[in-house]
Image (cartoon, rainbow, N blue to C red; front, side, top):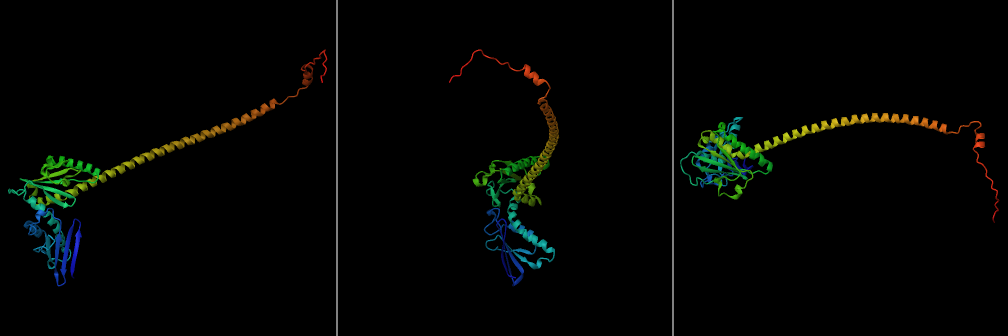
Length: 343
């Protein structure tokens, strides 16, 4: 079938697939990816080392086309006759899909491969800015017998800065121990290192400091070269992963601690409610006793008051009236003078 299709991937990566119905056994795959540094893209295309690396990774089914299609760094001719059928085809397709990553990492691989070279390169001590992610550039400084990789660290949250700073300090302490003497020496500084003197201020404005690794010849020997390149290109992702996991761990511990405190408070409140209920029950019993006593007292007081009323009633005794009239009567006084009534 006729195919003229563009595919886009995260990181401004573009794939252009072309196939013709007149030639059903072949298709063309063009790849465009942001390079780490534009210095690696020569006037005649990719370097010879990059071409050899792509040939070594891709299978016999993929062949490099010279020159590449305009606007793309690499064009491959895919021969479907050499792609096996069944499950074996997945391996070949995986190798072809890895060409973009190889194309991107081959520049750094070529720099590290020449770390042990005695040749003095032009601009030896000048930092080379590599952009693996648009917002996360890092620098490579060539020096005799070693290469220094410097990572400016930037974080959005203040809590991430604190976690990352502790992580970098621990990384330096562990790297300086005897057990990790073979690992690349690591240093962290809150200010730019002397190697980056003269760079743009926007590249040196950070809130997480600068992490530097010294890449020595023993770190790029044989299969260690691919591991070193992979570690450097994914260092930002590794730090973010560590910070995210640490923040999640702290939040889980805080939630567990909060749950335990809530349980303690709930237990204390339940015990307090039980004590209040017990006091309330005792108070009710005491009030019932007081009410019963008050009723008894009121009843006794009523009986006593009725008795007092009965006592206060007049008691009739025979002869008392005659005694009262005879002895307790007031005497009558008569005056010798007479008084005339005046009109």
